[in-house]
Length: 78
Length: 218
Image (cartoon, rainbow over all chains, first blue to last red; front, side, top):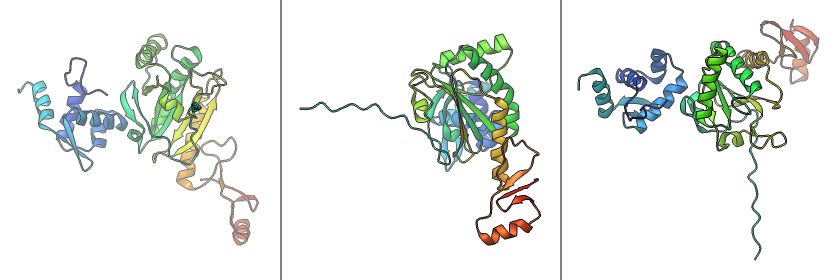
């Protein structure tokens, strides 16, 4: 599930995943809240890390500053 | 000086009871790895080619089977030696022409990497297409069952569902399942391994034909 579209913008689903991750939710909870299968969330989390929008620490995912900026940009705060 | 003989790499052939070969592949749902499915059962299946009639009937049938599989904690993942664009176009075509949305990812195995890992190509049938293979992989990533159908014969979805039910029943209850078994029917109790256990089995109160052949209801 690419986290960025063809123009390089963070996709709506990626933003939604970041927002749930930012609450400290583990990936299975992200899957439940997005109504997506866990395998897609695992794939998305990997892509978010590769894009520098999240980091993995001891099996948990933390939204990076760049990830928070992406979320805020969309919500109109930036 | 002799020229070294270039040997064609031998395609691997996965084995039951061993870890399923790991892969990372581009799919219609993005880049996926086998490990992404850990914790779920997975049916990895191949089809010969997009935009072909038998495969289309199978994709419709797999999509219709998906809700029953989901109840059993089973994910589906298709594969063929076609591009991602071909898969997308075919999936859209199926939705338009047959009214069926394909809910599972499909691997675009254009370089045959996954097909070769899993022995999906039968050169006697076709060197450029995968046969109709089904691999059942358990939540621990172990290959539990394989079914191979030829290019000409569409698969029986009810048999695939029956196979899943049988494997899950075996795991849950430590039993085996007889020929043509369906959920709700009696199961086979593993035969005793010692003479004393065989004697005990005869008195255990199961439906016993002889010491090695006992059934029970779950």
